Amino acid sequence: MNKKIQKIINKKNKTKIVCLTAYSKNMAEEVDRYADITLVGDSLGSVLYNFNTTRKVTLTNMLDHSKSVKMGIKKSLMVVDMPFNTYDSNNKALKNAKKIIKDTKCDAVKLEGGKKIIKQVNYLIKNKIPVMGHLGVLPQTIKGKFRSKGKTEREKRTLINDAILLQNSGAFAIVLECIKTSTAKKITEILKIPTIGIGSSVNCDGQVLVTDDLIGLNETKIKFVKKFVNIKKYIKSGVKKFSEDVKLKKYPSKKHSY
Ligand code: KIV
Image: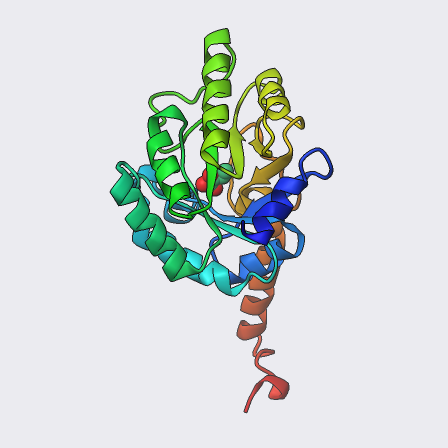
């Protein structure tokens, strides 16, 4: 097994796992300093391209951003989301996962779903493609209004079964998105592999957020997002100062001219 992946698994019940998204080299460089896992999430569809659904994200989108991200990574495990419609059969999943790994040199891929995609997950892992799972709210298949998961006994049982299926297939970790606290806690306790929560409470083995959300670059009102810094304030101030200095002919000075 990839040593970086084994290190992530070994963190379970010892230290919390930090996972953050990056869509470009410059962001990846900063994320890589603190994150155990850098995720090129298909959330880039809504964050960068204003798509109303991640279903519109293409394989080309993911490959281009992932190649950029790879340039910024020195130590973290790089995981790339397989976009919608790229893993709906075993052969398609393997062909596309191989392309993602070959072209971007990432360490693993992430797929959304449990039982419904377990054949593909098994097939990828048998073919030595490391897989991260994703359960709970699944943006690629979301229908109608947003609703958190794992609130009813039935949903809880399905989620637990899906998580066990993914673990038995050989997935090395599972993202739990917007799952009720007690259900996320139960899944985390049952599994030997780590859970990475997003809106699923502190009981998960790690946490993931979209970096653009936590730094305030992407405006969002989603309940689980905490704005840790308001980066827009700094961007505004730099852009304003540049604009003023250009108009006042203060920039470029001799120092900045050839
Ligand atoms: O697409 C994404 O960024 C994700 C994370 C938010 C888990 O899947």
